[in-house]
Amino acid sequence: MFTREVKGKVDSIISKYGKDQSVIISILQEVQKEYRYLPQDVLEYISQVMDISSAKIYGIATFYEYFSLEPKGKYIIKICDGTACHVRKSIPILEALKKELSLTEGKTTTDDLLFTVETVSCLGACGLAPVLTINEKVYGSMTPESTLEVLNELRGECKSEN
Ligand code: FES
Image 1 (cartoon, protein in one colour):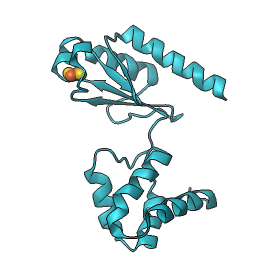
Image 2 (cartoon, protein in one colour):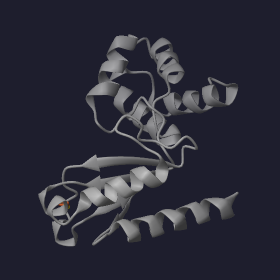
Image 3 (cartoon, rainbow, N blue to C red):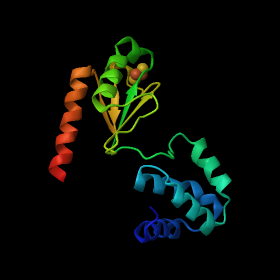
């Protein structure tokens, strides 16, 4: 929802970079960092304020893999399914996570917006296969069991934060 608070946040991001169209990617990056995705009403507001067509903004938002138009979880789990990880059984890890989090091919984020699960082609750490990352942290030599343990630790951390 485009609340006054959201508007204030977006205004401060725009005033940091200015309204020149050349800075649109930096602005979208900050919005994505703030909300973990690009909310539609925010994109429309930016389009008006910066006088850039929404078609152009959506074009940028869909071109770069970094941007998402869908809400993502607090923890983004990327499971490598490159050759080295696939051979060392990355798929059973993915299946265990999907089952535990009730996710499917078309539903990659949990309803409580805690976890998003994605696959990637190679995380560049093949020696540690199978590998996954959770936000910026790399986890190597994982199994379905050790992955679910990490998941439970993260759930515990969230509970203690609340
Ligand atoms: S194949 Fe998984 S890290 Fe390279």
